[in-house]
Length: 489
Image (cartoon, rainbow, N blue to C red):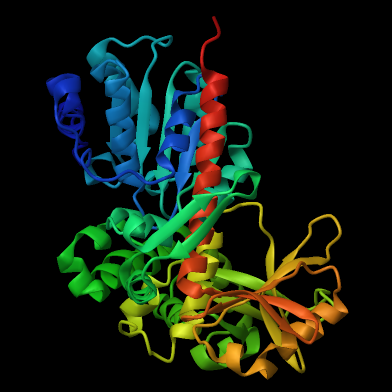
């Protein structure tokens, strides 16, 4: 059997790295597309020579990881890094199948007579398609400390589980989530048209809607397709998101990525479970109920849930009781799609008055929280009530704030719907007031009921605020780090 010739591999490398021929003046693919808010922090990590680690960029399919890599290459070229010192390799390309990273790197070194002490930037895209990639990457980091290695992967199940075993101390993990609602509005150029904000010193920003009806309309669009950058910019994809999102994103993970990584033999079984979970996004489920509805054994479901969560398709949220105590045996939990657009692709697009809007609004708000690593969120449920979001203080393990997520103005007029909040606050007097209640069109920051203060806020604006504040926090950290890295006189 013939092996792929070295000359053919080098020819493919030259094709994938056109800047070797065109130099820094040449056009780079995707360079004209908007940059994610995460780009500055990511690119600073690449340029920071003080950290001798590989940077591993993880995240769901189609959220912009490869685009961010090309943006980084554009930045390196603009920073006077020599074009021949940058290597990009997509390991999804068939010609590289089974080829060790060391051999690819050696061809690159030989091509430009690079030395071990050269300042090189190596990008391995979709690295999970190389078996035991983490051992290969760790070896390269150890062998070439002056090289900067960056890897991306969408099958986070492999990346997370394996990098903790043999890559400890060698890899810095970086997660790129789906678009926030704030990023979506920025990408379509409507942020300043729909949102007004004023800075209030240490208190942060005060946000107001400029057009509630239009803001809500764009929020529904965001639920349908707005988590994916490509869908935002392509009218073809927006007109048929099910074809793009289901076939190109969901099916590839369920039918190819997870089965190949874990040897899952019954793909239809996994697919049935995911479909059940997607339909119930924002609702409480149980292992028993999932087993009955999907026809999958409970022990198998536990394994599949871990895979689906690690692959950034779902997120599980644990339940606590009215005293904010966890259950010793967690038989029930809530499940959320990490990107609400997946449900629309599977079961049809949402409209403003769709019955599923409540659950999907809750899904979208939890999706914004994916962008913060420090928040520990739960939901509370007991015989007479439920609270959608409860934040537990990590030190005291007591609730510090709560949010009730609604796509309705009904609780503002039917006050009895707030009784569950009253009961929970009386059991947990340390909860911060006012209690946040999202609504469809009502805003009121000083609503009093049974001695408890409530704040009603538009669900669409609340989702925007979450994303905007988290992204601004990222900007602040970037600025601090940039200042620290500036050379001193």
